[in-house]
Image (cartoon, rainbow, N blue to C red; front, side, top):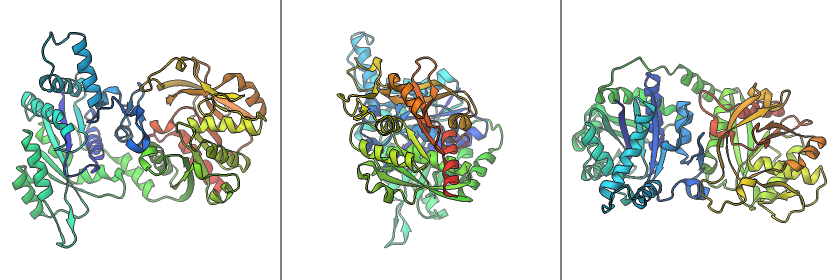
Length: 534
């Protein structure tokens, strides 16, 4: 029977429920259990696909085309296994399903209510992964904090599941904050006690307390928390602030979180945790032999989470190269022909990031032109590839006014244009080209050197494509189309043949980078930047 673990949060948001969930999952996976993680978000949006990156951070895309919360990126990076649409559920999606069922008459004329209809749908979604994919353990992270109005239906669903399945099959971990008061020189437990009482008011007794703290927890504090929160002393887990999220699994191993979970769920131990590869990765991460500086050219740079997977991909690929990668965010709106050389003078390479809309587009054009003309290693992703094509069409092919129809619908040279199947679409949510698509790579190219394969699968999230009517002219002038979708003949990768490393992809390689398998394009790009610096 599948075991279910729920991770709730208290006192404040952003304590790291996703990292704790992923770390516990990694430990259980290393012990031989099949584990997956899902995220339940209390907002009413159906998914984050239409949310501004400033509002929600990046929108993470899965193989099956789901637009999801960025926490799912950590799930994949830690577990090195793909997640799906079922791994991210929002209140909006729950209500959408229930309302659709009501419209179809599935409730046989009954009054539709939060209890039982909404809570039943939440429970169905929780158990979907365990029933369909036969996981040993399903970890469910509940977004928000205990006490939020939006979270109440989720807590009620958890209470019901604990009653149905029993405590041997359903476990609650509560992540909470232990603030340190400088004036008193001590950690304070009252916020945690109140948070647990709030959870108990919802009918849920937490089984394990994970306490975020900047200072070590003494035995006296553990005993106090255990006594007043009604948990065992061994179930009070210290989660001290780490210098890297990738250290957290080892900290949780030291605190024996995985062993406590195994004992409480009465699981039969399979083997001791094997974290050899993880420790080797941390060794390379903490002991680099090289150092480079990359410029991240984007329009949402004020919020680091807007490019979370790109930052993490640099870190993971940097470790693979035993290289410390310093990423300098540069706002594309600040780039002009007469100042770009000064801004890029200390950079060993640039990455032009994805995005939507006209704001900052011309600054990205300026960045691409500088990298092309000065042989600076260049990596373009999604809009970054489209920017590279527009720049080349303008400044090499001499097509004055060449542009993307996203930026200028009346451009005389539509080198980037809306896909045919997108032209009749009115609704914005979930209607882009989303998910995993095949790509055939030409041999003797930078892309082939990186992948060492002619056939790959990569994830997409866009509406506009390179216009194939310009393809021959681009290739004749030196911009090679080295990755092609075999089914639609759409261009997926472009390169410059007379440049040390100038590669751009229509897909999002950052979505498929993990600790055990850093993405080959990021690895190759960093190698090129190291060579450029030296």
